[in-house]
Image (cartoon, rainbow, N blue to C red; front, top):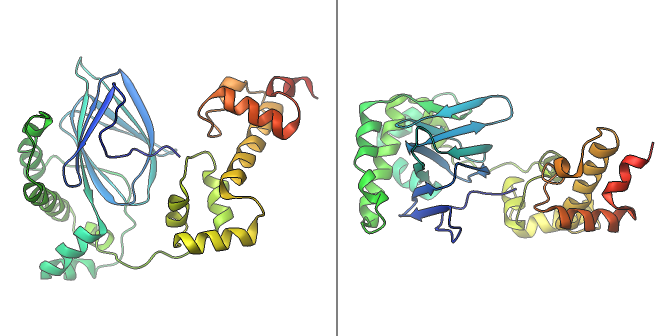
Length: 284
């Protein structure tokens, strides 16, 4: 699974600056997409251009001056593109578990709000309140890479963002301040549903509710393969089915199942099946 990594990248069409978990993004091409899965809660504000979020069921369009809340551990496809002649620029506020614990301990009213029935947070386009409008207006000077804010100032902006969320709807508190340890989930069930995404071992451990050592130990109980080899085999099996039964072309399949380039896909396919993927259509 390709993750949107909040650090500056050397890619010429995309630049991301990280200021103490506040990220400034610039996209210079017409459209850029990624599979996004943040381990933390976040707010994403569109300064210019447009962002489209697709969760497989619906698309949420976020235009200039609009902001969206993204839950923790929620994977979604993001499309960031130019609109009305303006490139995409956005501000991403990430609320880490440590930050939220600090805020929870400092303000008594949060504890009362968090005691309400738990709300399963989803992606939500936020109303354009005065608090959100003023917050991001005060942050726009830092799109200039020559103007770098101090970390403690960005910490205050994270607090403002958190307060803006809580005053929009107190139910946010029941999600943001849920510090229970994650439950273990079935590893194979998770991989069957998410095999097409790019994972590190640390990601797999996190998303299945395990430490890295526990994940490695549990995986050995269910497969003789390494997680990386298991994922490659699963992707090739899915590609074979799509081509043979679904009549899909190689160019339509290799990205869909999680390969980054067609050459790697073709080589891996031939190694596993003994035939090139172009030969699959010749079998009845």
